[in-house]
Amino acid sequence: MIPLFKPVYNTEKILAELRSVFDTGWTGLGGKTAEFEKVIADYIGARYCVSLNSCTSALHLAVKSLKLSPGSKVLTTPLTFVSTNHAILYEGLTPVFCDVEKTTGVIDPMLVFDYCVKNSVSAIMVVHYGGYSCDMDSINSIRDTNEIPVIEDCAHAFGSKYQGKYIGSGNNIYCFSFQAVKNLSMGDGGALVTNDESLNTEIRKLRWMGIDRSSFDRSTSSGYAWEYTIDRLGYKYYMNDISATIGLCNLELVASQNARRKQIADYYRDNLKAELPIYSNDRESSYHIYPVFTKNRNEKMVQLNSNGILCGMHYALNCDFNIYKEYERINDCKNARWFADHEITLPMSPTLTDSEVEKVVEVFNK
Image: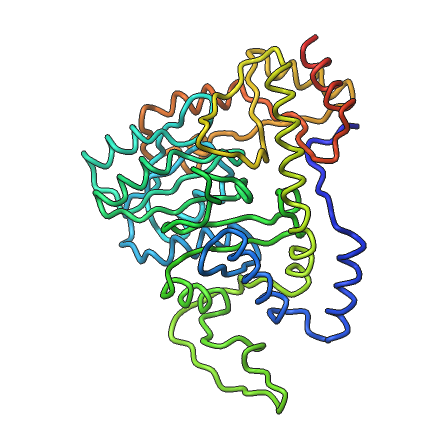
């Protein structure tokens, strides 16, 4: 079978590095986690990276850090994995589902602008669908004019660029995923990236039960300092040194794997008989997903699967789930619905051979 997603691991290096970690006897939140945070921040071009156990945790803490009043409106997208919008509900806030651009799947900035002018909005949540960046100049202009904080769900976007800079290097709150099939995989994990020193301090407390100093920080060569303080409710959301070690080793592969993903996407673009997204030249996608659209999507999926090609669709609209049906929908989410009804996710693993990519196209075009 040709897989839909297949992560690549720097196996031999990972095993060697993990042996060293195990030999230290410290596998929790420790030195390797701190090293991972510095390396990721430097890679992206941000001041701070707070590592976490998932992107869901990052999204939750990002929303929580805004300290919004219960019921406050958060403008968001229906075309995403539910973690994005669950994070809004976790804090007792009200999601307002904004429609997306028809083929890119990213939130429509004109609809965001129109809604913000006419309504009270407390925050904006955007998702870089498939690794393709939203129009952040427009979104950030709305942010500045209306003093509305912006959270960027970057679960698909590690290694993506907007106007030549890595996503995560600006002045919003950025949430990344390192889950099993993401472009930087460590089995599971996430991170919140920021340039705000006070936010960095706050998230570090929240990720470890509200404790002001981690166990690793309280460990010294001369013994263990048991004293610490807690001044807020926190969570057990931190990353561990095992995951961080895997992430550090796999980071070496990200650039080449993303380049291979682009090659596959380019071949699809040039050879598929299907409607395809139109991408702006000022953005470089990580190509976690390259959406393809066809009228007979379900039949195509059966056809591909029966020929040994696994495929999928991303995503069922969040606003259609029972838990979200009561919430407002801008433009009735018409473009998002078209997207969800026609999108098919074809194999994008960097492990695919040229002949496998050619087979996908041949079977799809039949």
